[in-house]
Length: 101
Image (cartoon, rainbow, N blue to C red; front, side, top):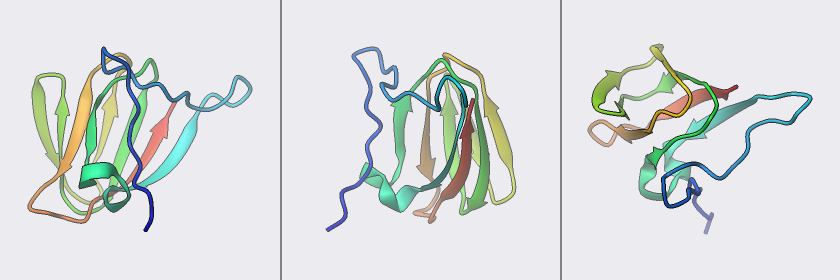
């Protein structure tokens, strides 16, 4: 059985994982929701900018108090320090390309 990923957060929902290194301050992820606990991304925030491109499926992002539905090929920029979460729409198999800077 494969252990599912979980976004670790503190009591204020700040993500505890650092992204990139001092010499290369970014990460690029291939995020398949089937690999995440609950098949979604739980609410969290971080001090980094996040750029998302939907590679597969349909996903509903909750960005602070706004809800957005994105489909394949659409993207989103999430500013730093903004709480966000993502859920598949209609049990869609969601795969994202996520760049955190």
